[in-house]
Length: 336
Image 1: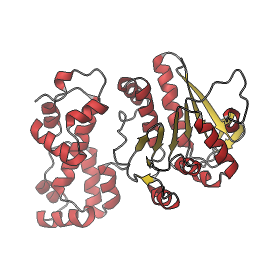
Image 2 (image 1 turned 180 degrees about the vertical axis):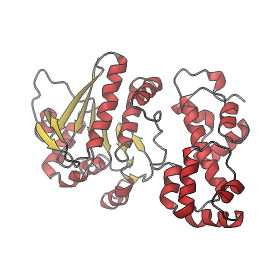
Image 3 (image 1 turned 60 degrees about the horizontal axis):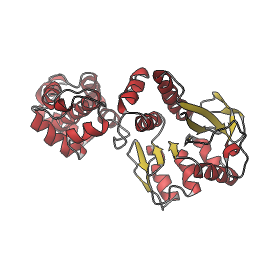
Image 4 (image 1 turned 120 degrees about the vertical axis):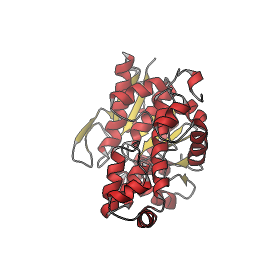
């Protein structure tokens, strides 16, 4: 049985908010060897829609065609998943469009938004009382304009019942992978991610910025150059003394630079990078905790458990159970 995904776009939408999730579902079809996902591009009216980057999309369906007040033709199928793309144009949608969107959402099994598409869903009232997310730059505005909504400003995506919201741009692909995993399994989601040269399905509670990107944004001068060097090989045998020497400063001044620019010590920085690497391996492999801890220079399995729990709020075994490879050997999941 096919699953119909309707993606709503509008003038000045974000191109990747539309093309990214679309490609995830299309790639799933390819890997399945059949058209499980029936993809339909919707706009206010069928025809050309210019994205914010100037590229033109061609919508084949009208948003109103499947609303409860319209009469779908015998050849059209109802919406299983309705997704709303983000983009600056979302703030220009008039009340008539929002009413059509609300009517369309009522009949859909799943409703979601990518990036600022959350503003459109918020205007329908569907997000009231829900925990949602959006692009980090727009999170404060969403919370201010819609006080009945709880905004998780740093999350990649959030699920609340049958409602899904994601952060900006490429996070829409993470949300689509989560939906593929929900419909099938994590193995298929992982194969799609590999096909698209992505990290395997980042979990929704992962921060919108990686630790490395946060540090790149916050650092400058010699420290920024050093951060780039470490990020290029995060699992090398780095230590504070050697790093300080490499930029010709004393260890004491090196500690001071880190605290001034990054609000952490060099040891904390290296530990966070190594934990991010361990988290990816927990999701992408069935290696034992001991092997992962050794590979990521975190010590032993028990040290990895303690540090992972402290950093992410759950045990490595619990993380792997939620986001790891389906069918991985259970004996290697938390072995020491």
